[in-house]
Image (tube, rainbow, N blue to C red):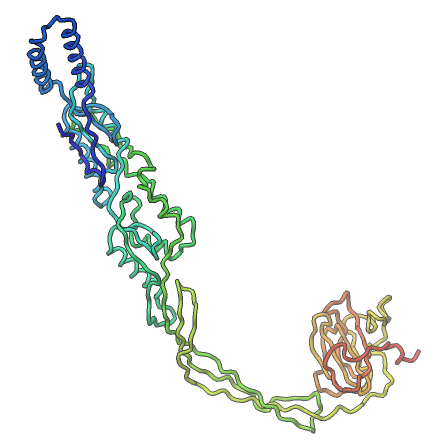
Length: 496
C-alpha cells in the first residue's frame, strides 16, 4: 500500500517503506502461537497449512476492514498523530498555502515535508485531527521561487524576476543621471557582471526594485543593511492565517505560528551580510564659465621714488566657456577632461608705474621726542636685547610726531603691531606702533614734528602707549623685512 504525500519530495529523496507497527506486532504474535501449537502437537502437522492459511485470510480481511485503518501524519519524517481522512489534511494545507500566497502576492509552497501513510490502528490509538492541524500550523514554513541578483558572482539580494532587475538598473541610472545645473549626461552604465541565479527563499526576503535601489545607493549604511536582512526571519500576518474551521468544528482555529525562524531563512542568511554593491558609471557633460585673470605690465619711472607706485590703467578679468566631460562612479567624480573652450571676453592688461629713484637722505640725525606733550618710559619697557624699542606711556589720542624729516615707507596694520608706520630718513628708519589711527600714507613726505598718528592700544598692547624704534639702514635703502635693519637705542638721539 503506497503512502500519500502532499508535497513533491526534494530531488534524490525517497519515502521510507514503513510497515505499520500494530500490524507487524499482531502478525508476529499469531505466528508465534501457531509455532508453539505445532511444537506441542496441539495441532497436527498435516493441519498446520490449513490453519495458517485460514488465519492469514482472516487477518488480511481484518486489515482491509475500513473501520480499523487511518492515516499516520509525518512532518519531516516525524510522526505527529493519526487522522481518518487524508483529504482533510491535504485541503487544510492547501488552504493555508493559498492564503499565504495571497498575502505575499506571489505563489508560495510549504518548505516542510508532510507525508500521509495509511496504517492499521488498534482500539487504543486516538484520532486527533484538531491537534494535527494545530501542529501543522505551528511548524509549517513557506518558500517561493526567486532570482538572486549577483554582482561579479557575489550574491546581493533576491527579487521575483528578471524584469525587477531591469527596473533596478533603470532606477539606478535615473538616480545618478538626475540633471542638475544644466548638466547633460552622455552615458550611464552599470559596472561589473550583474546576473541572476535561481533560488528558493522566504517570501518575506524578496526585495522590490525600490528597496534594492535604496540599498545600493547607500550600501555602506550598516543599519539599513540590517533592516533589509531582518526580512529573512519575519513571519506572515497572523490574522490572515486563522480561519473559521471547515474541518469538523464550528470554532475558530488558533492563529498560525509559522514554524522555526531558522527554517524560514532557507539557508540564505549570507546573502544579506556581504558587501556586494552595484557601481554605476556616468559620463556627464558640464558647461561652466571660468574667469581669465588679467596680466600686469609694469612700467618704470625714474622720476618716482623707489617706494612709489601707481596703477596707470586698471586691468579687467576675461571670461571663457569651458565644456568638461566628468566621469563619476556612484555619483563620485573620478575623472574630469576638458572637452572644449571658447573665449567670451578677452582680459584687459593692467598697467602699473613703479618708481626707481632712490629716496633722498632727508634726516638731520637729531631726533625730537615722538609724543606731543612728553610722556614717560614705561618701567621695564626700555630698550634691550628682547625689547627693540621704548614704550612711551601717555593718554589715548595724543598726537604722534615725526622724529625727523623723511618719507613714509609703510602705513598699515600688523597683527602684533596694530596700526603702525615706518619712516625712512636716509641713514635711519623710525617705527611707530599701536596707533589708534595713522594720518599719513605710503610715499608721503613729512617734516620733523609733523603729526603722523594718534596714540592708541591696537595690536598686542596692554594699554595706550607708543612703541618707538630707531633702526640703522643696512645700506640697501629699502625695507624688505621687519628685522632687516639693526635696531639701536633711541635714547641716544635725544638731549638729556
